[in-house]
Image (cartoon, rainbow, N blue to C red; front, top):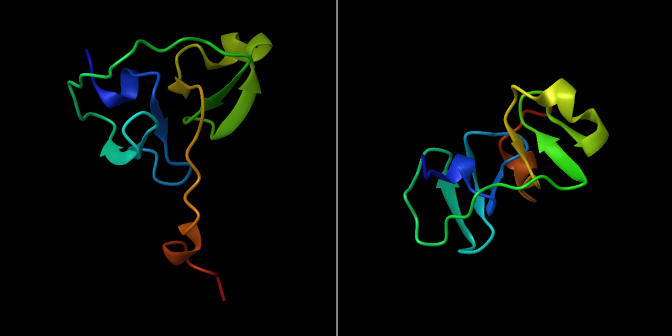
Length: 88
């Protein structure tokens, strides 16, 4: 299925994992948006992001994340402090 979640150019947000950013188009999208003309199948890289565990892992740990949603990178919103409570 050619949706953002399955595309190599899509990076999920570190906090709101169902939204992310398209690296090629430089726009925010939802994980199930698509199809898209710049869609490319995901590939493994040396370090990957697991949105289920919310951690970066080395390819040697890939077995532990086999059934998880993994991505080449994660998008960190510089304004994340605006939608996370401070806990004061």
